[in-house]
Amino acid sequence: MYSTKDEVLPAEGILSEKPLPNATESEQGESAQSGIAQPALSTLLGALLAGCPNNEPGPDPIPDSGRPPALPANLRRLVARTTYGVDGDEAQRALDLGYEGYLEYQLAYEAIDDSALNAKLAPLTTLRATPKERLESISREDFSSVEEFLTATLLRGAYSKRQLYERMVEFWSDHFNIYFPSDTQLVLKPLDDLEVVRPHALGRFPDLLSHSAKSPAMLIYLDNASSRLGAPNENYARELMELHTLGVDQFTQEDVKEVARAFTGWSVNGEFNDADFGRFRFYPPLHDRGEKTILGHRLAPNGGMSDGEQVLALLSTDPDIASSTAHFIGRKLAVRFWGDAPPDALVEEIAAAYLQTNGDIKAMLRVVLREDWLMQAPPKLKRPYHYALSSLRAIPSDIRDAPLFAALLQTMEHLPFHWAPPNGYPDTAGYWGNYLMPRWTYGLWLVYQQGAIDLALAPFLSAESDAVFLDEVDARLFHYGQPEGHRAALADYLAGAPDNFFRRLEALSMALSSADFQWH
Image (cartoon, rainbow, N blue to C red; front, side):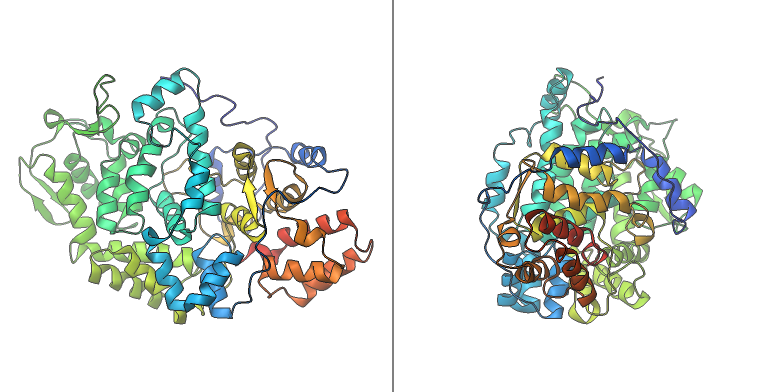
């Protein structure tokens, strides 16, 4: 149909890094399947040096609201886990609202004024383009719709005031993963984001599951669009149960075959001149009309499209079967917001909330983010996307060149929607601990780059002394919790050239790259 241009996914200067010993064999396998190119370190360092300023900059191009207020430990933990990074506004809001008030504020995302973000998104004119419009532009080798989709994702993560909502959009984008850089998905994945994930990210899981099952992007990605009577494709059926609902070892191969039969005829309208081109369409002649038995439940013959809908209801709302789904979703939420090895008791509570509320996502989040649970949580390593955004939130910023920022995320192996297997980006320190070099160099790039991202650096560079500079680093990056040893190491480094502009830039990059900033 068309091909992805090099400008969209640059792949020059690649190198493969050997995983560190703490990666499991399965995680190494996932990395090998991801198909994501990583620029050579020399290329990245060359870009760093090329952007190195030779004199002190003028006034900051964006305003700075001042040092964030100090937060008690419980609020600091809550804001850190519900956002992509604590900035001054969120810190003050949490202080004003208190623990429960701030959590409810973030859960009621539709009431949050996000007009400042909307102003940033306004120039992106293709965000609501139809599949036909996207296909026509890409066929003309106009990839603006691809670039604007990724740009909007980055801007929302960095600058939306609806931070918990954006984190849940990312969570469900991983859960219902669709690999964006393939021909068809350049057209269809943005529609999935707009009409499936975003409207239901803080709604009810059964609704989200139902819309995902009818998503043209998902139907094509997992091969159900071609599944038909006499030749059912089992790929979507298997992943629907293993990755989207029940988890492994909760169904049989016979269940896979029967579910595949139930979804025959669920496809995509491929008639280019039709108003619904690229939308879901059920084709009755392609559906298997026979009786089916799924997870011990009989589906009567001649059910038509309701066969698939009954399967979705079994998996997400049946009192017995949905218990496995509740525990599977509960554990993933616990890993994302609590830590890599959550207590079974926490997972049980989240699952109970699912079953009691018919899959209400907010109810589950109220459990995992409850103060008594969250204050027991261990430190969690930020995934690269989270780490990069937290840097831009710690230092007031404005992304000017989103494609360049996306390229940096790609060097860190975590550009949104670019994980090829259907299981979504991993969410454990054991996996991401193997990709530290690009993260370390990112801090250096951020403070030395010119033009790609505006940064409010004046509070650091214009501080009246190195001691005040270190106070700014402690307040803005570590929320007054910087370890003494870390501060002392930066002080020793600054002592080599007191009050020096470049020395401070380098010290700031060290703080951004430090282990203490990489965890939250």
